[in-house]
Length: 187
Image (tube, rainbow, N blue to C red; front, side, top):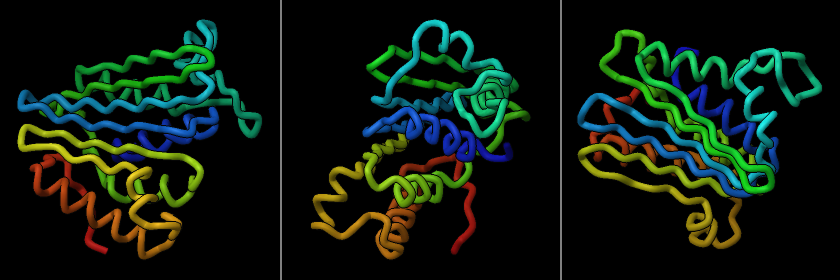
């Protein structure tokens, strides 16, 4: 994939399919040219056998197709930079996928438009709560849909004006903290 945000979208869709009601996405950019993307959920989790098979592109729990390329492609993107991918999961508890990228590698894809990715996820999954945190040496910010729902007093987060505000807020905050992985077009 050309942008890591698209990998995030794919991995988070796995969390949604696993019945997660809370998905936390964290992007941490360090001063040492390392970026870590952590996606954790409270979905159904995986047993040891599933956890071992999840990196196999010919293993999938989906019935609509016979291959599952999300995790293998994400692992490859991380490893090409000298980083790696770890998956922790416990049946009935949830799953955590952590990928580390060396951003000074020529093979490191840009983070991409996480603001748009978050808006797609929030808009398409009204019953799921998302917590997005972005941290750099210049600061951090968090967007938590539980707080947004409280502020919106019954207005659905999937409303286009609300999603536009969320997108703009994430982009603005990313610029303020000096997120080095900015890669989006102005809408």
